[in-house]
Every structure is written in structure tokens, then in C-alpha cells.
Length: 108
Image (cartoon, helix red, strand yellow):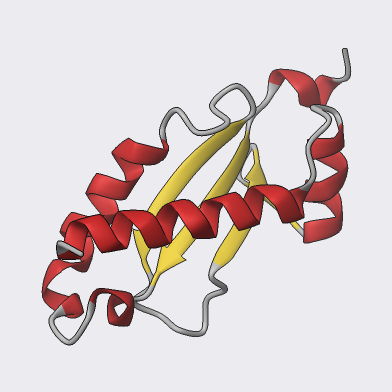
């Protein structure tokens, strides 16, 4: 076992309030708390999720960390190969799951 296998990848996902419609700014914090709970079990054996509002558009939509050290996508990809996973598939699933959750939240 490599030293990284005992550590989880923290994936910070920043959600823009505009995704929640014209009143999104009023509900984004509540939505992110709900999403955080929904994602806790998603790839939980090797990913720790942080679903937060994207108040600063200068920050990227997603960031990767291990032990509070920021990783670029190449290093995050390398880490995920330890679990026979790839970042593109996880990001696609994340986007689909978030879109479905937004629809449920908005009552669609």
C-alpha cells in the first residue's frame, strides 16, 4: 500500500447560485448543505467531498487536495488510478448527480 492509499482525496466543488434560478443567491447555502449530505457516501472510500457555494468566480469549479495540499488534475488522476478510477468518469457522475439534485431541489 502506498502512503496515498490511506488518505482521501478532498474534492471541493463550488456551485454557482445561478444554477438554482433567479433566487439562487438566496438558497445556495441551503442547497450546498443538502448536496454535502447527498455526496457523503459517493465514492466515500477514497473521496471526501466539500460542496460549497461559488461566491468568488475567480475560484475554479473544482479543486483537489490531499492533506490540505492542492493537487493539479494530473496528480489527482494519478491518485485515482490507485483505486482503478478515472477523474473524467467521476466528474461526469458528479455533474449528473448535481444536476439531478438541483432539479429535485427546484421541484422539477
